[in-house]
Image (cartoon, rainbow, N blue to C red; front, side):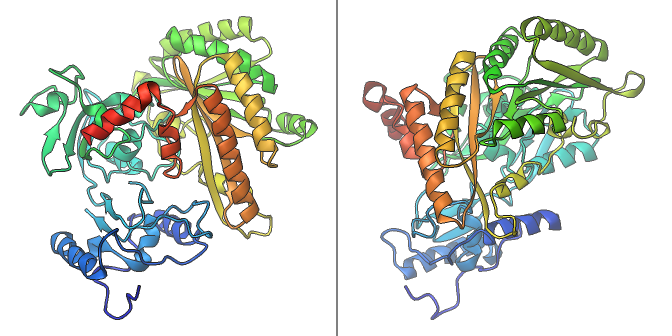
Length: 502
């Protein structure tokens, strides 16, 4: 297709995403620096170039030329970690409109980018909730709260530049007591496919004082229809935040051996269910297809176990101390091989605790402060000479919170990864009755052998998970259909139901 004979209808300049120049530089380098072959123009299915140009002209008439993108600018709208880019299987949009994620579901689509809808509408510190638009990042929300000295700690994930709305609708998680973001939605505004605007719950009542205070409503609750779906575009989100506490204790529990995951999960699973630990426990391993003798050396040098569980206690100082003392008694009795350590931070003279007063490694996203902490992980397998392109993918399973089940899964996943000469790089989030277990694969995208190995690892883990009845809590667009097929009751009645709604 020849697109050089006339000037482009829309902008070909790479979008300016962030006012912060450091953010913008990292983002630009990540997207453009990860491409292994130039983008090629594509047309929407069944459309000619003249048809597309006419549509883009109308889009420009609504949002301006600097809000519609084609050509090289579309580097910002492809998956920078795509496995099969070299082989020509990359999904590419025909254009993007600044009115999701970085990549389209279908090649030839028009990417609808909500980045400029970046207004924080309200943060109420008495009732601890926020109302925001989809372009608001975790950093934007944190800065708004800090600048206005609001008595709330927003929950943030490991990368601060993401959309709060996007993360929440994709069932993302953070680390504070409101960490399970989608469970703290209260009131959505959504544009449906026919252009109609609907609000959910009490938010649907004009001037309701309970718009973002109560999940109780009249009639069917429909907020869940817009989680991981294409049934509408969320334009406003009400979400609960955590009230700023008087004190916070940073807690770390570790155990020395891989097999100790069984004990750790059984103890902390019970503590999550009975309310002794009221919020998420984050567990990670010391990376390794590394020989066990070297792992032992690293554990000694770094003073850490094979498994480390990190979590926080939040509230009045005396209550937290009593809470910690009881926890210490329980783990001493049930896991004498483990170590529990805690460090208290409290506001002066009984005042509320300033999150910025909590130093690393105790604070950061555990006290609601955004970070880019995990970004360097994508370079884990790059050559020492500085070449290569860092990338990552994962298999993230929902698994019952059973020590025996988790031990079996870790041993299985370790074999699958090590068969391809990859480390078992994993972490998991402990909820009351299940864990979200993330098998992470960091790889050199420019190395065809690593791309093929990662693909085999994912499908190997998927097969093993399917045998056990495990599903993923979310999936890459390349694997969406594969995961959807798991929901097979009554000849996939769930999928047929959602398709009828669509």
